[in-house]
Amino acid sequence: MKNVYFISGLGADKRAFSLLDLSFCNPVFIEWIKPLKNESLRQYAIRLKEQITDPEPVIVGVSFGGMLATEIAKTGSTRKTIIISSNKTKMEFPKILLTGKYLPLYKWLPSAFLRKSALIRKTFLVSCQSKIVG
Image (cartoon, rainbow, N blue to C red; front, side):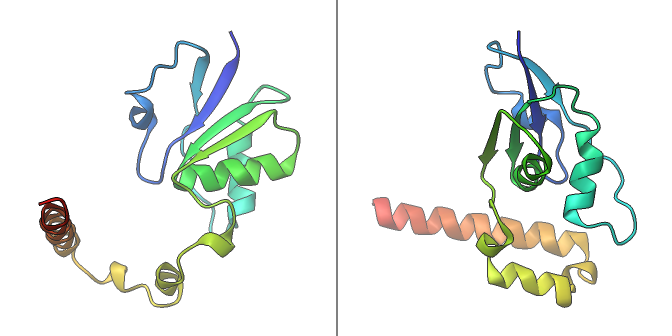
């Protein structure tokens, strides 16, 4: 059975793939490692690649894991790279989110505020959906 390497999204682990039927392959879940100070995305991806033993791997990445899968694919031969809910390049990254790089307000906001704002967004979306459907 062929190894397929899976990279979860940022802040997630192999449980992100728990509802998938992976019986077609031998799933290998790439473990997150601590980034080095001032390490680029490409450098980090190269270090993650050390967990891949196949010369021509199939890699599946979700969200930020998809960006890393793309960077790994750029470093050499991969048989196939599958990205899910991700950007292929930095040009596809929403401009509003880039402001966080230069103005990291999220670092100063308490985590409770962020959780509440997520609940407010979810409530708003459900309300909007019911008006569209109904």
